[in-house]
Length: 119
Picture: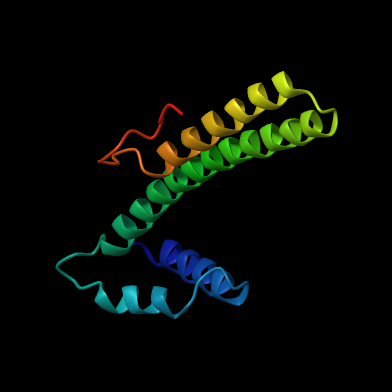
């Protein structure tokens, strides 16, 4: 790597440490990089970025699902206050379905009984 680029990279890393974006684990990664694998850090950072983006996307989906459960619970509560039997049954069914949808997102490869039992 050319000296000016190396200086820029070192400055960037130092600034990231100062801002608290990097920690001691990054220094440990730097120590693992050897001459036989000069692109080790680059590969680790790329994997971190790709995995992080995927994981954050999955969390966002789960939070959206959880929001649906919350909204269904609010609707159920309102129906209970209105003493609407049909409304309670319908909204309870929504709570159950939304809950199972979120559960299936958390564990898409679940084995065993169906996540959508019929009551």
